Image (cartoon, rainbow over all chains, first blue to last red):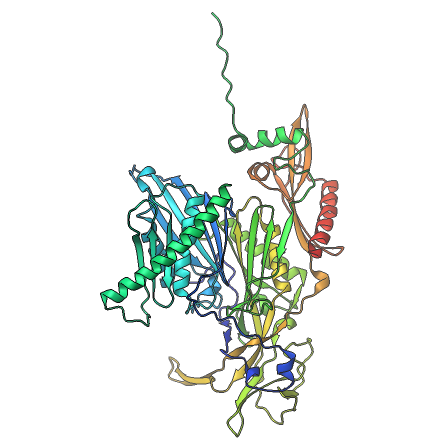
Length: 260
Length: 368
């Protein structure tokens, strides 16, 4: 079935395939001097702190929004709600999370441009459900009966999709967390996430509760490290926790500044 | 018995504009100012960011497949536009738009307006996409020849070195037929190269994301599309003999056919800017006509760059103007009616005035 609602372009168009390395690097001569070869920005997931740019409330026709830039990764989150739902009464709010990559970020085989895609891809679904599981326990849903809270995440750009997946997952949670704050939705605590490159992300809440509480744990399947051992796992979680706490303190500072 | 005084209900502007947009707008306009505190013929401020997230962005190259991008912010509304590409063989184009005799190409746009719902696209998104598609085609900004590919050829020399030969005049065609001179990357002319004469072209896709929609977003989408096209860079492409594959297909009648599939590969670094017809680049403006009752008669007011619910719902007639230089590229009139109908009457003066204003706006937009 062709999509008649959208202008998709020629059906037989093939997507652009890029060679991994420029031919000119293998050649010498005029051409290479004409084009300055810039090293592509393949940022290995750094173990240090990432520089983040944050702006809240950019989008005005939703209740809360947050925009984050981490290197070339651009994330925009809008929160709609609490808004009334139709139908019978329910005593808690329903939460939904939809994470979407802009079509050209995912390699769609069906369409050269991915423009005609309606449903979420597997990765988008996985990310959505992780963010959902982090927030479903922290938002006080019982405060908003017969309403729904919808979190829409748009990944506008991502630098090197494969290597930075964990990093992306991490910041999706953080960005969504700030947009919840912007929407002034009641939460048990603001959550932040910390990650160890290549393997795991955990999300924490850490204010009221005596211990940092884990609300979400994501272990990437292509992990290098052996985490069969309980000790290894707990040390990894400790490290994530530390990062989440660091981030939390800088976000706190940012939020306090905003109020001032 | 004393008559009870009716109670007055007071509304905040927000609520008032929702329940009675027409009265709200009328009250405002009678004061000589629009609800958004602009004058009648005043446009919103524009910010354009051409530094994008494209692959060939000089300041910040990435590995994405985006060839050109832009972010345009008008008032509170932000539009992010990304141009991506595909390759299509000229022999078997099924799409009518590319095969017709029209010498101009267009892009295939997809517009998404963030509104907190998921699912199929809305009417407005479809209409804007269609309008972008058609306006670009009719304005003649991209020639089809600008999208033609002159590919190089990657092969192994006898001493097992890999080299790529690109056409002598670069990958950009000037519309004339190819000269078959090829040049090696080191400047030597190649002797014999088994070039295929199959022709390929780029197709361009545009993805437009609209955030905080506050009024008809066509103008902003158009500006974003043009600004993104202006920094779009097309990759150098070449055929790789290693990846050329052939497979045999058996048809129903039992006959065998061999399909040779050769894929063009894009260089990750080498690129050239797309050639646009700069003179034909124009920008779009939208005007709304509002009728407000003034005693017995009614008065018509032209509002530039309409914004907000009250203006949008009260503007019974809309005029879209796209001008390039001193030439009119496109003029669309929605609504409007003869006396007694629903729409405001669109007079010659209004059209003239809107063209004049659009012209000024276009000059301003092209300067940023």
